[in-house]
Amino acid sequence: MTSEHLILIELGDILGIAIDCERCGTRVFYDLGKIELDRIHPRCVNCQEPLLDSEKKGPEITNLREVLSGLRALRELKFKGTIRLHIRTE
Image (cartoon, rainbow, N blue to C red; front, side):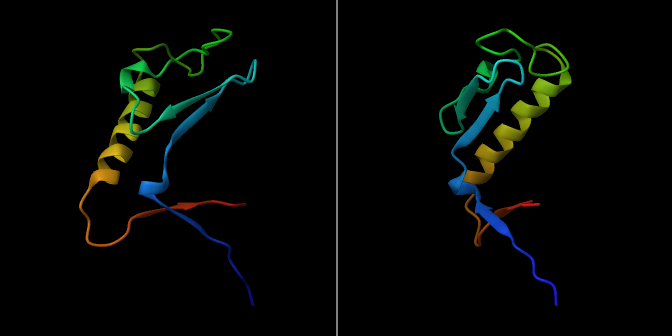
């Protein structure tokens, strides 16, 4: 017999994202309900190390902003059911 441990997070429970710098360890939290997506920094706010492989106008920061915008829109969706994210625990 096998068992599986699942973590399901309702979209309304997602408060935001935290981005940690590999170099200096600085963590910046972006509140999903309040953040202006164009204010997400492509560089560490402390040491200025690039956090992405490209600069501000590159596809990675655009993709991140689109994901956050999509999460924000899904949280506000009037869905007759529950949408949850399945999180890997292993």
